[in-house]
Image (cartoon, rainbow, N blue to C red; front, side, top):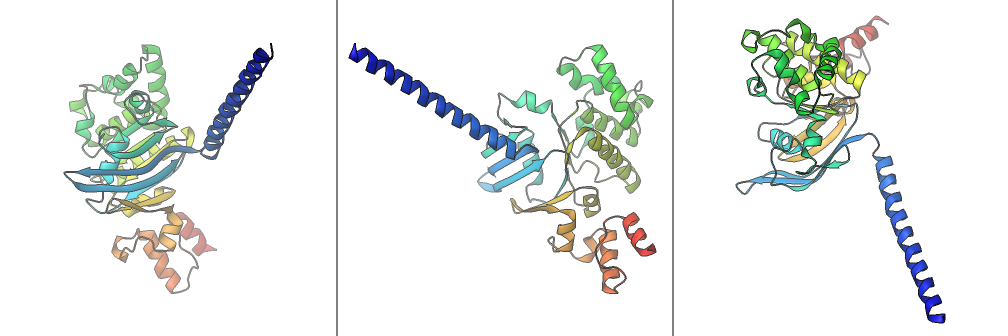
Length: 305
Protein backbone atom coordinates (compact mmCIF):
# COMPACT_ATOMS: atom_id res chain seq x y z
CA UNK A 1 0.00 0.00 0.00
CA UNK A 2 2.83 2.37 0.95
CA UNK A 3 4.61 1.49 -2.34
CA UNK A 4 1.49 2.32 -4.36
CA UNK A 5 1.09 5.63 -2.54
CA UNK A 6 4.70 6.63 -3.27
CA UNK A 7 4.30 5.56 -6.90
CA UNK A 8 1.12 7.62 -7.22
CA UNK A 9 2.82 10.66 -5.70
CA UNK A 10 5.77 10.28 -8.09
CA UNK A 11 3.41 10.10 -11.08
CA UNK A 12 1.58 13.23 -9.89
CA UNK A 13 4.90 15.03 -9.39
CA UNK A 14 6.07 13.96 -12.86
CA UNK A 15 2.82 15.21 -14.44
CA UNK A 16 3.06 18.49 -12.53
CA UNK A 17 6.69 19.06 -13.57
CA UNK A 18 5.88 18.16 -17.19
CA UNK A 19 2.96 20.58 -17.27
CA UNK A 20 5.13 23.32 -15.75
CA UNK A 21 7.80 22.68 -18.39
CA UNK A 22 5.21 22.82 -21.20
CA UNK A 23 3.75 26.01 -19.70
CA UNK A 24 7.19 27.67 -19.58
CA UNK A 25 7.95 26.72 -23.19
CA UNK A 26 4.55 28.02 -24.35
CA UNK A 27 5.04 31.20 -22.31
CA UNK A 28 8.45 31.82 -23.90
CA UNK A 29 7.03 31.28 -27.39
CA UNK A 30 4.14 33.68 -26.70
CA UNK A 31 6.50 36.30 -25.24
CA UNK A 32 8.87 36.05 -28.21
CA UNK A 33 5.97 36.44 -30.64
CA UNK A 34 4.62 39.37 -28.63
CA UNK A 35 7.98 41.11 -28.93
CA UNK A 36 7.98 40.38 -32.68
CA UNK A 37 4.29 41.09 -33.25
CA UNK A 38 4.97 43.47 -36.16
CA UNK A 39 7.67 41.33 -37.73
CA UNK A 40 6.97 39.81 -41.15
CA UNK A 41 10.43 38.52 -42.10
CA UNK A 42 13.38 37.46 -39.96
CA UNK A 43 16.72 36.39 -41.42
CA UNK A 44 19.18 34.87 -38.94
CA UNK A 45 22.88 34.15 -39.54
CA UNK A 46 22.36 33.66 -43.27
CA UNK A 47 25.40 32.69 -45.33
CA UNK A 48 25.61 31.48 -48.91
CA UNK A 49 28.51 30.47 -51.15
CA UNK A 50 28.69 29.67 -54.85
CA UNK A 51 31.64 27.66 -56.19
CA UNK A 52 33.41 28.28 -52.85
CA UNK A 53 32.99 32.04 -53.24
CA UNK A 54 31.10 33.55 -50.30
CA UNK A 55 28.20 35.68 -51.59
CA UNK A 56 26.37 36.33 -48.31
CA UNK A 57 28.06 36.38 -44.92
CA UNK A 58 26.19 36.04 -41.59
CA UNK A 59 23.24 38.24 -42.52
CA UNK A 60 20.82 39.18 -39.77
CA UNK A 61 17.83 41.24 -40.87
CA UNK A 62 14.30 41.89 -39.68
CA UNK A 63 11.46 43.48 -41.67
CA UNK A 64 8.27 44.75 -40.04
CA UNK A 65 4.73 44.73 -41.33
CA UNK A 66 3.48 47.80 -43.24
CA UNK A 67 6.98 49.23 -43.78
CA UNK A 68 8.75 50.13 -47.03
CA UNK A 69 12.42 49.10 -47.18
CA UNK A 70 14.87 50.09 -49.90
CA UNK A 71 17.77 47.68 -50.35
CA UNK A 72 20.81 49.27 -51.99
CA UNK A 73 24.29 48.05 -52.77
CA UNK A 74 26.78 47.79 -55.61
CA UNK A 75 26.62 45.10 -58.29
CA UNK A 76 27.81 41.81 -56.82
CA UNK A 77 26.94 42.76 -53.25
CA UNK A 78 24.47 39.85 -53.02
CA UNK A 79 21.10 41.62 -53.38
CA UNK A 80 19.53 39.29 -55.96
CA UNK A 81 20.99 36.22 -54.25
CA UNK A 82 19.32 37.30 -51.02
CA UNK A 83 15.99 37.75 -52.83
CA UNK A 84 16.22 34.31 -54.44
CA UNK A 85 16.89 32.66 -51.09
CA UNK A 86 13.97 34.45 -49.41
CA UNK A 87 11.74 33.42 -52.34
CA UNK A 88 12.75 29.78 -51.88
CA UNK A 89 14.62 29.58 -55.20
CA UNK A 90 18.03 28.80 -53.67
CA UNK A 91 18.38 26.15 -50.99
CA UNK A 92 22.01 25.41 -50.15
CA UNK A 93 22.44 28.13 -47.53
CA UNK A 94 23.32 28.24 -43.86
CA UNK A 95 21.12 30.06 -41.40
CA UNK A 96 17.39 30.40 -40.85
CA UNK A 97 14.58 32.40 -42.44
CA UNK A 98 11.13 32.93 -40.95
CA UNK A 99 8.28 34.50 -42.88
CA UNK A 100 5.22 35.44 -40.84
CA UNK A 101 6.49 33.04 -38.13
CA UNK A 102 6.75 30.17 -40.63
CA UNK A 103 10.18 28.66 -41.11
CA UNK A 104 11.24 28.73 -44.75
CA UNK A 105 11.47 25.08 -45.75
CA UNK A 106 9.95 22.69 -48.29
CA UNK A 107 7.00 21.91 -46.04
CA UNK A 108 5.96 25.57 -45.69
CA UNK A 109 7.03 26.83 -49.11
CA UNK A 110 3.62 26.75 -50.82
CA UNK A 111 1.89 28.59 -47.97
CA UNK A 112 4.67 31.19 -47.87
CA UNK A 113 4.43 31.79 -51.59
CA UNK A 114 0.69 32.48 -51.31
CA UNK A 115 1.59 35.47 -49.11
CA UNK A 116 4.75 36.69 -50.83
CA UNK A 117 5.10 38.20 -54.29
CA UNK A 118 8.43 38.70 -56.05
CA UNK A 119 9.00 40.82 -59.17
CA UNK A 120 12.32 40.26 -60.92
CA UNK A 121 14.01 42.47 -63.50
CA UNK A 122 12.74 40.87 -66.71
CA UNK A 123 8.93 41.15 -66.69
CA UNK A 124 8.54 38.92 -69.78
CA UNK A 125 9.79 36.04 -67.63
CA UNK A 126 7.02 36.80 -65.13
CA UNK A 127 4.17 36.42 -67.65
CA UNK A 128 2.97 32.86 -68.24
CA UNK A 129 -0.44 33.06 -69.93
CA UNK A 130 -1.48 34.47 -73.32
CA UNK A 131 -4.25 36.80 -72.13
CA UNK A 132 -4.62 39.23 -69.26
CA UNK A 133 -7.51 37.53 -67.44
CA UNK A 134 -5.79 34.13 -67.39
CA UNK A 135 -2.55 35.73 -66.23
CA UNK A 136 -3.95 37.56 -63.21
CA UNK A 137 -6.14 34.59 -62.24
CA UNK A 138 -3.32 32.01 -62.60
CA UNK A 139 -2.11 32.16 -58.98
CA UNK A 140 -5.66 32.44 -57.65
CA UNK A 141 -6.59 29.19 -59.41
CA UNK A 142 -3.54 27.54 -57.84
CA UNK A 143 -4.95 28.70 -54.49
CA UNK A 144 -8.29 27.01 -55.36
CA UNK A 145 -10.25 30.22 -55.90
CA UNK A 146 -13.53 29.64 -57.74
CA UNK A 147 -14.85 32.00 -60.45
CA UNK A 148 -16.82 34.07 -57.95
CA UNK A 149 -13.81 34.63 -55.69
CA UNK A 150 -11.62 35.44 -58.70
CA UNK A 151 -14.18 38.03 -59.85
CA UNK A 152 -14.23 39.57 -56.35
CA UNK A 153 -10.43 39.71 -56.30
CA UNK A 154 -10.29 41.40 -59.71
CA UNK A 155 -12.86 43.96 -58.59
CA UNK A 156 -10.85 44.70 -55.43
CA UNK A 157 -7.49 45.12 -57.16
CA UNK A 158 -9.04 47.18 -59.98
CA UNK A 159 -9.43 50.04 -57.49
CA UNK A 160 -5.63 50.36 -57.51
CA UNK A 161 -4.40 49.20 -60.93
CA UNK A 162 -7.49 49.71 -63.16
CA UNK A 163 -6.81 46.29 -64.64
CA UNK A 164 -10.35 46.14 -66.07
CA UNK A 165 -9.19 48.56 -68.79
CA UNK A 166 -7.08 45.78 -70.33
CA UNK A 167 -8.75 42.66 -68.90
CA UNK A 168 -9.95 41.37 -72.29
CA UNK A 169 -6.67 41.95 -74.11
CA UNK A 170 -4.10 39.42 -75.28
CA UNK A 171 -0.66 39.87 -73.73
CA UNK A 172 0.95 40.48 -77.13
CA UNK A 173 -1.41 43.45 -77.62
CA UNK A 174 -0.15 45.27 -74.51
CA UNK A 175 2.18 48.25 -74.61
CA UNK A 176 5.05 48.59 -72.13
CA UNK A 177 3.02 50.42 -69.46
CA UNK A 178 0.17 47.91 -69.69
CA UNK A 179 2.61 45.01 -69.27
CA UNK A 180 3.93 46.50 -66.05
CA UNK A 181 0.38 47.08 -64.82
CA UNK A 182 -0.33 43.42 -65.58
CA UNK A 183 2.63 42.00 -63.64
CA UNK A 184 1.99 44.35 -60.73
CA UNK A 185 -1.68 43.35 -60.63
CA UNK A 186 -0.70 39.67 -60.68
CA UNK A 187 1.61 40.31 -57.75
CA UNK A 188 -0.93 42.20 -55.64
CA UNK A 189 -4.10 40.26 -56.42
CA UNK A 190 -3.12 37.39 -54.08
CA UNK A 191 -3.07 39.89 -51.16
CA UNK A 192 0.59 39.36 -50.25
CA UNK A 193 2.04 40.36 -46.91
CA UNK A 194 5.42 41.01 -48.57
CA UNK A 195 6.18 42.42 -52.02
CA UNK A 196 9.78 42.19 -53.25
CA UNK A 197 10.76 44.34 -56.23
CA UNK A 198 14.16 43.39 -57.65
CA UNK A 199 15.18 46.20 -60.04
CA UNK A 200 11.86 45.64 -61.85
CA UNK A 201 11.30 49.32 -62.64
CA UNK A 202 14.94 50.34 -63.12
CA UNK A 203 14.76 50.89 -66.90
CA UNK A 204 11.49 52.82 -66.89
CA UNK A 205 11.11 56.54 -67.38
CA UNK A 206 10.51 58.62 -64.27
CA UNK A 207 6.82 59.19 -65.00
CA UNK A 208 5.90 55.51 -65.33
CA UNK A 209 8.08 54.52 -62.39
CA UNK A 210 6.33 57.09 -60.19
CA UNK A 211 2.92 55.84 -61.30
CA UNK A 212 3.77 52.24 -60.39
CA UNK A 213 5.22 53.26 -57.03
CA UNK A 214 2.10 55.35 -56.35
CA UNK A 215 -0.10 52.29 -56.94
CA UNK A 216 2.03 50.17 -54.60
CA UNK A 217 2.09 52.85 -51.90
CA UNK A 218 -1.69 53.26 -52.03
CA UNK A 219 -2.20 49.50 -51.81
CA UNK A 220 0.36 49.26 -48.99
CA UNK A 221 -1.38 51.86 -46.86
CA UNK A 222 -4.74 50.13 -47.19
CA UNK A 223 -3.54 46.54 -46.75
CA UNK A 224 -0.53 46.69 -44.37
CA UNK A 225 1.83 45.47 -47.08
CA UNK A 226 5.58 45.26 -46.47
CA UNK A 227 7.70 46.30 -49.45
CA UNK A 228 11.34 45.41 -50.09
CA UNK A 229 12.52 47.44 -53.08
CA UNK A 230 15.94 46.66 -54.56
CA UNK A 231 17.25 49.55 -56.60
CA UNK A 232 20.37 51.45 -57.68
CA UNK A 233 18.53 54.76 -57.84
CA UNK A 234 18.55 56.54 -54.48
CA UNK A 235 15.67 58.74 -55.66
CA UNK A 236 13.47 55.66 -55.18
CA UNK A 237 14.53 55.39 -51.54
CA UNK A 238 12.63 58.56 -50.61
CA UNK A 239 9.34 56.74 -51.13
CA UNK A 240 10.16 54.33 -48.34
CA UNK A 241 10.70 54.26 -44.59
CA UNK A 242 14.09 52.55 -44.22
CA UNK A 243 17.25 52.03 -46.24
CA UNK A 244 19.27 48.82 -46.00
CA UNK A 245 22.84 48.78 -47.29
CA UNK A 246 24.26 45.45 -48.45
CA UNK A 247 28.00 45.53 -48.97
CA UNK A 248 30.28 42.58 -49.75
CA UNK A 249 27.55 40.17 -48.71
CA UNK A 250 26.94 41.83 -45.34
CA UNK A 251 24.20 44.13 -44.03
CA UNK A 252 25.98 47.32 -43.03
CA UNK A 253 22.92 49.09 -41.68
CA UNK A 254 19.11 49.17 -41.67
CA UNK A 255 18.13 52.73 -40.78
CA UNK A 256 15.43 55.27 -41.45
CA UNK A 257 15.67 57.38 -44.61
CA UNK A 258 16.22 60.49 -42.48
CA UNK A 259 19.06 59.00 -40.43
CA UNK A 260 20.69 57.52 -43.53
CA UNK A 261 21.01 60.88 -45.28
CA UNK A 262 21.34 63.13 -42.21
CA UNK A 263 24.27 61.07 -40.90
CA UNK A 264 25.70 60.49 -44.40
CA UNK A 265 25.79 56.72 -43.86
CA UNK A 266 26.04 55.92 -47.56
CA UNK A 267 29.24 57.89 -48.21
CA UNK A 268 27.91 58.78 -51.65
CA UNK A 269 29.22 61.71 -53.65
CA UNK A 270 26.69 64.46 -54.26
CA UNK A 271 25.92 63.39 -57.83
CA UNK A 272 24.43 60.11 -56.53
CA UNK A 273 22.26 61.64 -53.83
CA UNK A 274 18.54 62.25 -54.42
CA UNK A 275 17.96 65.71 -55.87
CA UNK A 276 15.95 66.95 -52.89
CA UNK A 277 18.64 65.79 -50.41
CA UNK A 278 21.35 67.49 -52.47
CA UNK A 279 19.31 70.70 -52.64
CA UNK A 280 18.69 70.58 -48.90
CA UNK A 281 22.42 70.28 -48.23
CA UNK A 282 23.15 73.38 -50.32
CA UNK A 283 20.37 75.37 -48.68
CA UNK A 284 21.65 74.35 -45.24
CA UNK A 285 25.12 75.51 -46.27
CA UNK A 286 23.72 79.00 -46.92
CA UNK A 287 21.58 78.82 -43.76
CA UNK A 288 18.33 79.06 -45.72
CA UNK A 289 17.00 75.95 -43.93
CA UNK A 290 18.18 74.12 -40.84
CA UNK A 291 17.40 70.47 -41.61
CA UNK A 292 17.19 68.19 -44.62
CA UNK A 293 13.90 67.72 -46.41
CA UNK A 294 12.81 64.56 -48.20
CA UNK A 295 9.95 65.77 -50.36
CA UNK A 296 9.59 68.86 -52.54
CA UNK A 297 6.27 69.67 -50.86
CA UNK A 298 7.88 69.83 -47.39
CA UNK A 299 10.74 71.96 -48.66
CA UNK A 300 8.42 74.43 -50.41
CA UNK A 301 6.28 74.69 -47.25
CA UNK A 302 9.38 75.48 -45.18
CA UNK A 303 10.64 78.10 -47.64
CA UNK A 304 7.27 79.88 -47.72
CA UNK A 305 6.93 80.14 -43.96
